[in-house]
Each structure stands twice: as structure tokens, then as C-alpha cells.
Image (cartoon, rainbow, N blue to C red):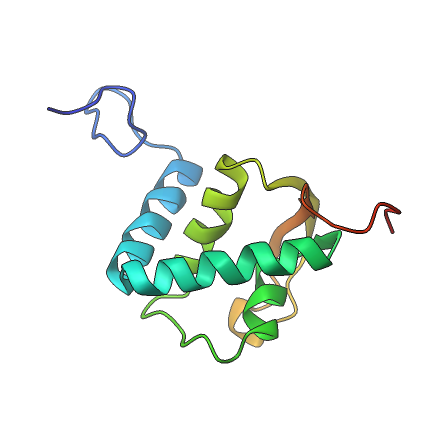
Length: 121
């Protein structure tokens, strides 16, 4: 049965916003990467969040080069969205990306809710 409140359910009378489309594509990309990749990436994301007050998703990718890249880098977006949904991080605003593949676009700056140092930077 289709859940009418599922953000990925197609509603012909209410077009999806650009943000909703982006989130849906991130979910598709993560699903395509596979369950093992998603678990490894999520665990790494949380480990990074415990050690860093504020960070970008690309910082996590760069910190764990041993994690193979997913077929589509948007899969990392789903990992961040899951961490946000699980109340591990929150948005702290936006900054310019440093990765060449992102071409200097604006990306989310995440604030960790599980940062283990009590003195915020």
C-alpha cells in the first residue's frame, strides 16, 4: 500500500519541489550503493560527528578514503539526511564546497549533536 505521507510517493496534483527531488535522488543513489555501503558510510559519518563540532559531508568523505565511492556521490546525501532524521546532526547553515567535483556550490554545514567535546568551537 502506498503511504500518502511518504515524501517519495508521486502525487500528480502536487509537483515535487527541487529539494524533494534532490532528497529522492539521494535515496535512490544510496539504495543503489547497497546496504553494506550504507551501513559503513553511516557508521563513518557518526564517528566523524563525534569528533567534529561542525563539518560538511565532503569532510566525512575525505576523512575515510577506505570507504569505496558509491556509484553516485549523491548517496552521501542520504547518509547525512538519515543522520539528521536520527537527531545526530542539525543544519548550521551553508558554506561553499571545496571538492572540485562540486564546483564550489553551496553545501550544508552540519552541526553535530553527538560531539564528544563539551566545549564547542
